[in-house]
Image 1 (tube, rainbow, N blue to C red):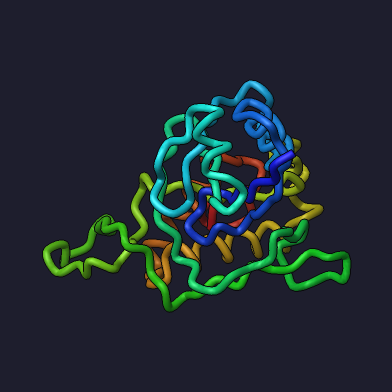
Image 2 (image 1 turned 135 degrees about the horizontal axis):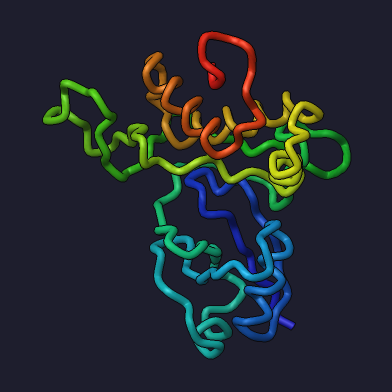
Length: 209
């Protein structure tokens, strides 16, 4: 049975799995399980290198195990990777350093900004954006959390894994937005996270601060 490399769609490709499958449908079903997706979630398969659709069994098997694939959720668009350094095929459950159980932390490279260009809200330098700058906006996606973190967020028990939640969030944003740093950007992240997961509210002038 062919074994395929399937990576997560975030620009750091922080989740990397090996999946044995004889058909596209089998790859999708096993992939949804391994990445912690809901069973009824609609996903598509594309190549990691350039986002080419893989929509037939014959195409999948012809590409072979040497081609890295990505599962995209419905409505999600392929984005180029910012990861220049290879990372492990396993992912951490804690989002921190190696634990001794075979899990390792993705080595995201903050010096490798994404090639997509968007301008941060409120920026006065819209016309001066570098073609290698990926900036945070209100429509930017939330982090792709590990199944463990997702479970606690949905169960409103995130206090049990608070440090892990912060670690995975920081890893995502540092990789995807290496120029992140203004108070307005951090506030934008807080508002969006609070909107998606109200149980993360903390004491302060605003729940999301």
